[in-house]
Each structure stands twice: as C-alpha cells, then as structure tokens.
Length: 184
Image (cartoon, rainbow, N blue to C red):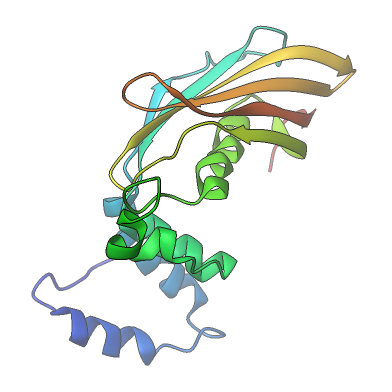
C-alpha cells in the first residue's frame, strides 16, 4: 500500500472516515494492519521446525511489549473502559500504582501461541489465573507446551506468561483441536 508520510493525523482520520466499510473493507484492513504492525511489537522467540507434528513436549514462545495503543484497541473491542486501564492518576491511587493491561488482553496472546503449532489449530477451551499485574510498557513472554494428548487430534497445552523480571503474570492451560493443513 502506498501512503503519504506527510499526512498529519487529522488529515489521515478525515481520509479514513470517507471510506465505506462495505466497499473498502480490504483497504481499511490493510491500513489498520500497516498502522498496527508498527505498534504491535511482537517477537517470535522460537520457530517450530517445518514438518513438525503436534506431540507432547512441543513448545511455542514469543514476546510482546504492551502499549497504550493495545489497551485502547482492546477497550474498543471489549467495551471494558475501566479507569484502571486508562486513567493514570486514578490508577496510581490503587494497589497497582499505575495503569495496567487488561488481564484478558494478556492471556488473549495464548491464541497466537496456539496458532504457532503445526496444523490448523482450533482453540476449544482456556483456564487462566492472573498472578501479577502487567503494566503499559511491559514486555510479556508467552510459552505454550503440549503436555497431554487427549485423543487422536486433541491436546492439553500448559501456558505461562512472564514479565521482563521472569515473574509469572498469568498461567493456565488451553485445550486445542488440531487438523492437518488443507492445501488450497
């Protein structure tokens, strides 16, 4: 996509607001993807070897630095506008001492971890506990390890999220269904 880097934010918003979501969906998604790719800050820590099959012990990992843009976009999607996420002054008066990332936003990264496993992965269930707050600006490392084969193509996966101090901020498990890749 070609874009004009000299466009100021208000001109950009004006340009976007003139697009018709029914007719310009592809362009809108491309613009959002390009903007967010500069803010998203995902780092895949380990790649799974090509040709791997899901099996007990297989692991996926990556890191993500959470920005206020992440929190704001999650609030738009979820409708959760709790001041603990948006108002530094009020959040600073809580036991957290500042704005925190939504717990569900942190653990939603489990979806990306599951998608990194080989095959077509369907998330069947999740169970998470939150152990420490994640602050805006924190980098979180996610790790998912297949711990049990439940049936032919269903697996239990242990998931841990840690901060830069290697403290566990959330932990739990996912149940996944894995289909063989489909060729187009």
